[in-house]
Length: 638
Ligand code: PRX
Image (cartoon, rainbow, N blue to C red; front, side, top):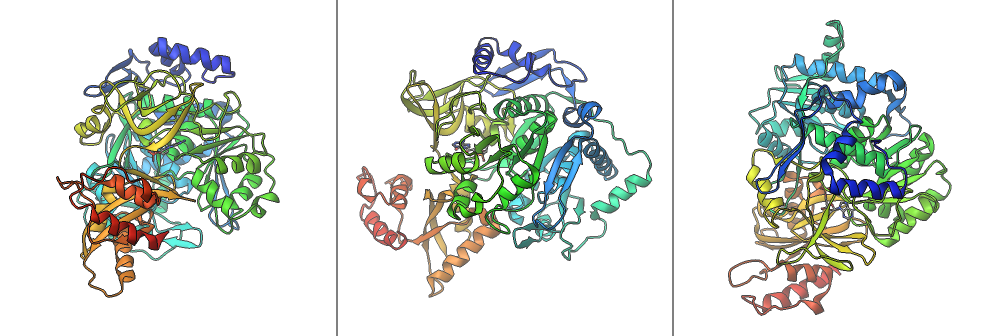
C-alpha cells in the first residue's frame, strides 16, 4: 500500500479501511519503512492499564529510516537548510549524506563519553543543525533524548533532568534570539547544582560567550569531534532497536503538578510521524518545507526532524524569531529559500499581522503552495490573512490539531485534497477515531453537537506512558472515560461532521501556542515570599491566543506594589521560564472559595474575560462579597 493518499476518494477508502481493519491498514503503511526485522504482531492494546504496543517483534533504527535509506538515490539532496538568526550570517545546507556523516560522528562522540543504549540524554541547544545532529545521534545508538526548549529556566531543566535521571547534557555556550544572546551554558551550570545524575556536559560553540568549563565534567563539542576524526573510522552502525524501545521523552504541562515526561517509542512514532507528514502536507520530492516551531516542542520533533527526514524531505529550520531584524523576516526566508510549504502557529500569524501589510506586500511569496497551522485554535481573522496575504488565496491551509501525547497530527485536512473551513481542523486522519463525550461519560452521537474530545482506538504515534509514573498516565488520559483516550480539549462537530476544536476543558493554558499548567504557575508565584495564595486563569489575548491572568493575595512588604509585581514575575521566570510570566497580576484580599475551600475558577475566568454580568451561580461561595471586590479591582486592567 502506498504511503501517500492522492485524492479525496483515496482518503475515504483509507479511512474506512483504517477503522474496519486497523491492523492490516497500518501494516500496509509500515511496509513503506525500512525494518531490520518485521513485526509478528501489529497491535496489542488495552486502554485500561493502559498497555499499547505497535509492531511488536520488529527491529529497526529510526535513523536508518531518516538517513541511510535516502543516501543511495538522494544522498546529495538537502536534508536540512538552516537559516541563522542574523540574516547577514551564511545559511547552511546539509545534504542527506552530510547529515548522516555528522550524525555518525556525533554518535561516536556519545559512545566515547560512555553513553549506552537506554541512557537518558538531555539536550538544551539553540535551533542550530547540531540540535538535529545530537537528537539523531542519540537515536542512532539507542540513547533516549529529552530535548528541553531553550526558554526554560535552570530550575525547569533540573526538574526534567532529575525526573529522567539523565547522565549527559548537550548544550551550547549561548544562543542568539533576535537581538538577545542567552547564556545557555550558564543556565545549565545553575541547573546542574541540583543534579546528581549528570557526569558529562558537551558544549557546542555558538555565541562565543565566556563560560565556565568544569574540569572532568565539561568538554567541547568540537574537541570531541576531533577525537573521533583522529580515531579513524567515522561510521557508527545503527543500534538495533525493538519497536517499543523508548525513542524520546518530552516534558509537557498538565493541569496538576510538575510537567510530565511523555514517552514515545520507536516504530509506532516513526510510522505515524512519517505517514502524517507525507499526507497532511502532500509533500512532493522537490519541495522545500519550513516548519517554524522549535525542536524543543513536539511539533519540532515530529515535523522538523523525524517526519520530514523519514520521507526524504528538505526541512528548513530557523534559529531566530519572526520579528528580527524586522517583521518581514519570515517572508524573507520564504523568498530566499523558495519555501513551498510553510507550517506555523496562529500566534506568529497574529503577531506579524499586527505589524502591518507593508512587511509582506513587497515580498516574493510565489513559491508557497501549501500552508499549515498548529498549536491553538486559529481565529478567522488570522486564517483569512494567512490565506489571502501569504497563500494568495491559492495555497490550501491545513489546520492541524494534535498534542504532545499524540506524536503526530490527528485531525486535519490534507492540503489540496480535503475541503477546508476557517477555524476547523476538519476530519480525522486515517487511523484516528474521535468521539465526543458528555458530562456523564456517554458518547454523543450525531452531528451539530459539542463535547469533550476523546479517541476510541489506538494510533501508532500515541504516548505509551509518562516517564517513571505509569499511574499518572492512566489517571490523566485513560481514567476520565472508560476505554477512551481523553484529550483535555472541547470540540464541536458541525452538521457536515467536521471538527472544530474549542480549547482546553481542563486547567491547562495555551499561551502563544505553548502549553502551560495553571498549577505550575501558581506554585511558582506562591514561592515568592510575599505571596499568601494565588489563582491563575487564562483570558483571550489578541496575539498570544490566551494570556495569563494572576489573582494574588500578597503581604506588601514593599510600598510600591509594582515592585512586588516585578518580583513575582522574576520568581516565575526563575522557576519556570519567561514563557510562563503572567500578563496581568491583580492583587486581591481574598479569593472566591466554596465552603469546602475550593477556588471557584469559573468565576475568576469570567472576571478575567470581562464578562462580569454572567457570573452564574455564586450562592455556593463562602463569602459572595469577595467577588464584588475582585470585579472592582479588575477594572484597572480593562
Ligand atoms: O488545546 C489543544 C491545542 O494545543 C494542545 C496541545 O498542546 P501541545 O501538546 O503543546 O501540542 C501543540 C502542538 C501539537 C491541544 O490540547 N491545539 C493544538 N493544535 C490545535 C490546538 N487547538 C486548536 N486547533 C489546533 N490546530
